[in-house]
Structures are given as structure tokens and as C-alpha cells.
Image (tube, rainbow, N blue to C red; front, side, top):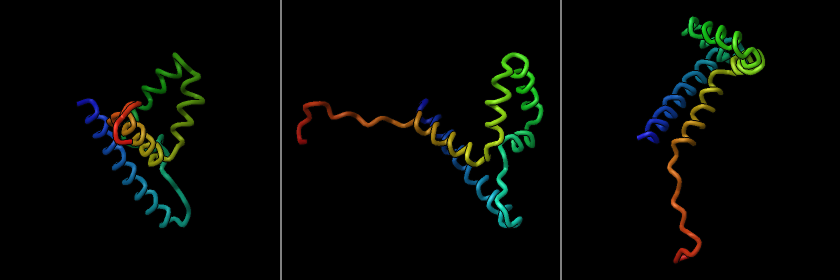
Length: 107
């Protein structure tokens, strides 16, 4: 059940990554230059209060997490972030292949 949840979240994340990549490609063709949407701009557009609350929490308690780490992550293009997230979620939810063992017959 948990593997299914990880694989479902991976599929949703991959679909979101493809949608964002198509949107960025369309905008880049219209502008005649590569202009990807950063993750921070996408997050601020859809949930500004959550981003502000996270900034207040991390800057107050652990300032080093906000300034170098999360600000760098928020500058990454959103489609790359969601593609990497999909890969990570799929790797977690992947069913391992059964090992044949050391003395397997038929090898």
C-alpha cells in the first residue's frame, strides 16, 4: 500500500513536471529566449502565505537552512525540481527484484 502511494505521487509529480516543461517551452518560444519558471515564483504564485510562514519559521530558528539551502532550491526551474522529485519517489516506491541466491539453479 505504501509503495503504491509513492508510485502514485511519483506519477503525479512527473505529470506536473511535463506540464511545467511544456508551459516553459511555449513561453520560451514566444519570447525567443529560455525563460523557465523558478520553483519559488511558482510557489509564491499559488501559496504565498505558506512560503512566508516557512521563511519566518526557518529564518528565526535555523537561519542557515533558509539562506543558502532553501533560497538556492527556490531558484531551480520548477520542472526540474518536480522531475527529480518524481525520480526520488519512484525509487522509494520501486519493488526490489528478488535475488536468485548464490547457488541458484539454471545459471
